[in-house]
Image (tube, rainbow, N blue to C red):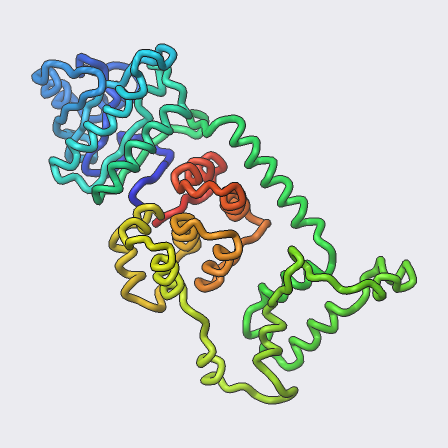
Length: 378
């Protein structure tokens, strides 16, 4: 994916360029600056001594020396003094100037530390927001893979309030999942069954009979629940389960449906649905894959192959880019053979942002990273 947040040692990143959060002398220091100088060796210090220093918000380039990269881009971030002395613009300039220098040298991949968030005192959540904002703006106009590298998860903060809200939503969904009534669990199981099981003799009938059986609670209360009108399992809408879909495909009991007949009833593929939704939203292909944090080459594969099988994060990235509703997102996932489940934090976090109407993929990825989940994009 074009922008990734990862946990790693930046001196180990095998990219075209790594960015050094330097001081104005460019002669080495503590933190990331010192680590890069130690890993690069004495050659880096010798070259830096010829550059005449660097102003805050500016950037300069040297060779990578013993580092696994071609270049080191040195930029000087601001010391945080309450945010009233132009620190945000200076920090934004660090990212812009560094990316411009990387582009001038033909770099295809760049790794940044979270500039100024160490001993310079810039609040980590604000520093990250500036980084994501500037990198995103650059990537909308340029093709490059950019990494934001954090050394450990303890140095990463998405904001206490957002973290708490998501954590509470995750907990609530877990509780709901594990306290579903018996009929809901059976319906969910039916949708999850592989086709080989559903095609077994009498499988659909047996499953429906099982769903129709009264629960233990109904038996204890004299079958009173049988008299109640049956309600849909979820959200008041009629549900289409795998078992009911199979029975509709077999109109006469005992009739064998040929494989050709079943293959002739294929639904719209993921690729077809994606391209249709892009047209319906009036978006360009470039706008869509940029907003999805998807590489241009991958999008080209999807567009050219009607039967392309994407990963689940890729499907959800496009759903976010297109600002699909929760139901539309579930439909797109189904086209690729996936579903949302309240058994996984990843799925619940995505659902949380969709329900909140927040389709900023980079904010979503910040939250996924904070909860140690896979990121959206590819």
